[in-house]
Length: 310
Image 1: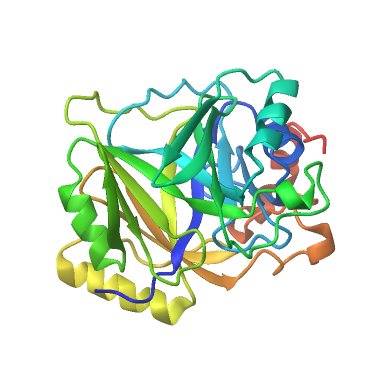
Image 2: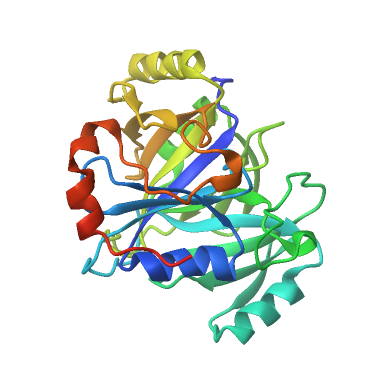
C-alpha cells in the first residue's frame, strides 16, 4: 500500500462560459481565483483555478471553459460530485445565500452522519457542501462569504460507477481505507490526510455511461508532497500494471495521469512549486499567465480570449 498520497490535490472540470464560471466560484461560493492561465493543449481556452488564499492543494477547483461545448450527460464512469467542507451549523447560511441568488434545486441530505447540501453549478455540475467538525483549514477571508461560514477546501469527491470493486481496490492500494457503507455508496478515506481525503464510490450497475461535456469533471488529482514521492507512486503504479504518463510540468505542479478501472481519469500532482511561483500571493490570479511553450503566442491569445471582469 502506498503512503505518499495525502488526499486530493485538485479537481478539473469543463464549462461553457468563462465569465459565468468565474462569477459562480468567486462571487457566489467565495473562493479566490488563484490563477488565470490557458490550457496547455489548447491555448485559446482559459484554464482557471479557484481555491483558498494561496491555492493550497486540497482546495483547488480548476476549469477549462470551452465556448460552444456540448452539455455533458451524467452517468457512470465519472466523478459525479465535488464535495466541499464547511463548518458545522452553516448550511442554513448557504441555503439562504443560494436562494437569494435564485438557486432552487437544492437537496439536503445526511451521509455517514454529516449534514450536506447538494446543488448544481451553471453547467449542471454536481456539488455538495458537507458540514465537518474540526476542519482547521482557513477559508478565503477576503471574498463575499464570511470566514466563519466559508468553504475550507474539499471534503472529497463522489465517483459514480457501474462496478466499484476494481476502483476500490486501486484506492486502497493508493492508501485509502474503507470506512463505511450506506446503500449504494462506499466511503474510503486516508488517515491523517490533508482534509480533502474522502472518496465515495456510488455503484449504479444499470446506469448509462456518462458523456463528457460542459459540467463534467475531466479528471481528479491526488496530492503528493514532492517529485520524489511522485516518482515512487509512478513506479508502483507501473509495476502494478497501470499505464501511466511520464511526468509533465504543469508550471504550478508536476503531474502524472492514468485511467482508473471504472473509467475515471486520475492524476497524481505535487504540492510543489505552488501558485506563487510567478505571482506574489497578494496578486494571485490577476494577470494572464502563459506557459513558456506558448509565450510566443501571447499577442494572439490575448486578442482571442474574452477579458474576464473580476
